[in-house]
Image (cartoon, rainbow, N blue to C red; front, side, top):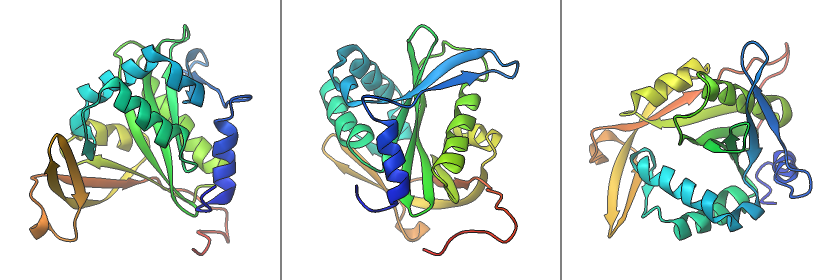
Length: 225
């Protein structure tokens, strides 16, 4: 454990346990099962088909990432092992159809004691019921607040991606600010970093930060950090 947020890290470890991984059924408004949600596991690193699928999704959507690298299968396998699987402060939920076909993923990152960020949200397949990813988002939000105890929940989206911003707003997130970005190119790697002022930016877009309003019981609020 990193000690960043021990109670939440223990729950992430339990959720990613090979013996008893967390699993959700995603329901539509009528109560029917639309899909399943389960964490990426260490055993998935040996699934060449899944690794290739995630690599293809990331390559097709590379402009949505702050760091852009060649999204080949082996690089994606290393990323999977280092971050969603190996990082105690991260989890990546796979969205799967009822017959087990991967449709996309939705991640969660612990960024401080009591604070979490929705990240790595990606719909890789157009297959799936209408409204599926809104229901996925609501499940991850509820789990972060009710089970992990998140007291602040944010999501960051490129400001030039209005569809993603509308999606998060439809999930209940509210725009908080737009941070300026600077792009740095190092060979075939592109890094976009948040900078202190717009004068330091070399991009026509920034990073939109949205937060999810969390209602606290009377007399309670954010615990001191």
